[in-house]
Image (cartoon, rainbow, N blue to C red; front, side, top):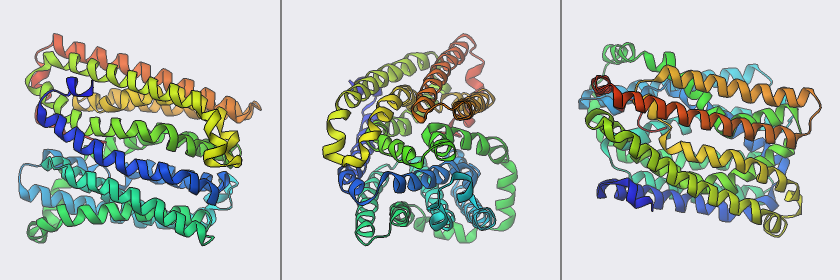
Length: 441
């Protein structure tokens, strides 16, 4: 079914490569989960949840979204200057993060003492994750997804194995965080050898003047895409973990982290692989065949909705039977939270493969407005639930409803914009060279 809407064989091959590597990489942490949930309790997973949520949400700020310039680079010199600019930006923002975590006692905000032991790892994790993001964009630029697929497998081995060893050694939440960092570092190191080393001569020839001109030319990325990217990342289930830890029991955050392993990761295997390839296809259609964009968009959304509904329905049905024997008695309380948040996952996973559509159409303002409304609704909803004495399950259910509603709104907004494109041929010219600015997320 997936193959029918992917179109040309080259697209199918790229999706299959990414799908295979991502599937193996995500399957290993899932297989290791029963052992990890016996080595670490829900509270300790809550610490990892807020740590990884903060790290992943801050990626757009760490890179200032300059990695997107790679997708519109026209020469080897431009590529080298972009790699230098983004690398220096990541380094500077990581050092800034170090100063911030040293100055601000974040652990007191969340009533989570375990954070005090791991917060100084955040700058290191942010550097590794942001550099991995940069290198994935370079792989996307050259259309070589095989090394990326290999890194997914490598991360799937390094992360869980190191967490298991550190858990057996009694490292607690620090072991979970170190394992997370090692998995990201392993992926970045692998891609570094493949995509940075060949650029060494051009990188050495780069100079500060060229890099500064490049930064000024593409200043719209840090001015607009960076902060809207933070809202986008935070809105994709990271924000709810932070809010739950801030206003409720950190154990519930651990339950939500487990739900991501069980429900979200398998869906991510498909949606991420489709996104990285379909974005290029949609951008090409916007430039060359705008009349075919809506049909392709609806096919992707339709197939993904069926897949997401089937998977989330299956998990919600069987989860009461498998939690205790598979993950341990400490995790029985996770069942209603997993079943509830499945509602959000259905609609998020449905829209994820087509999430760059508005940016490809240069409707960044509309997308940023949607991100602001979504973040405000989620924060307002959870804060209201906490202030009025509602239990955490109600807060999660409210979040799931808001997330589903906002994804439906995004769907109709994208359909409306694409319909306008079909009706107005002049939009074809506007979607020219800049249509590839944001091809993956």
